[in-house]
Length: 318
Image (cartoon, rainbow, N blue to C red; front, side, top):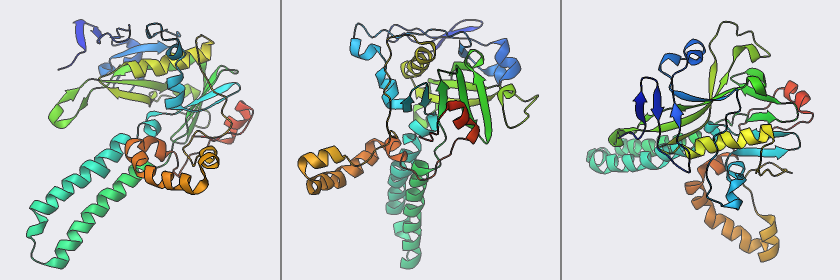
């Protein structure tokens, strides 16, 4: 049963969590400019720098929102911040469906159906083809192309987006962000409440293509089922960064924020022992942290040259 309640003709209210009770509505701007805008129920946040602070109940270590840097940032730099989009930091769903649920399904299918095939060659080909399909599918879900993050340039007060071969240069005051109700059907679980932070790309901000007359293009920054706190937290973290609000945590990254071999531990405990630990722990890391492992994908988009010029340095971290 949905916890999002309609309280008037054009007002929906979500459950209170961490001191925040989200409110959603339909807007004329969305109806006129966004795809399927007539059915879009959302909470417009930007333009307007609308503050949606979370109540950390006096936890000073959490109030600076460093958890969102650790979970969603591709790197902090002098003057700008790169934030990953949903297709990068939320890859576990596809991996689990193909790699775990899919293989369990095929194992059951093998046991109850394929085992009855009399011809051994056909039976083996069918069985191993199925396992190969789901394993390859899981790897594709995990290591498909990494899209560039959204670059929030505080010094320039601009936002840079490279999306489907179109480059957008957006003044922060004109950047359009909202949190929408985005429910999902989970089969036996039925309809589940969902929340999504969407960046709406205005065609007038496209640099390399003329998109005059087209609708805004949505970019999913983060999606979550049932819980709106991670969605509003992502927004509040970005808002604090671009406006200079505090408390705020950012780390000046010296290298890409991707998993790798811990050389410091290896020097401390010995390389042989460290390598053995790495080999033993790697399968568990893949199983429980697939989004982190996916950052090792060799398939990565790169920023156009213009972005490096606007930024003042070259950085293609993901």
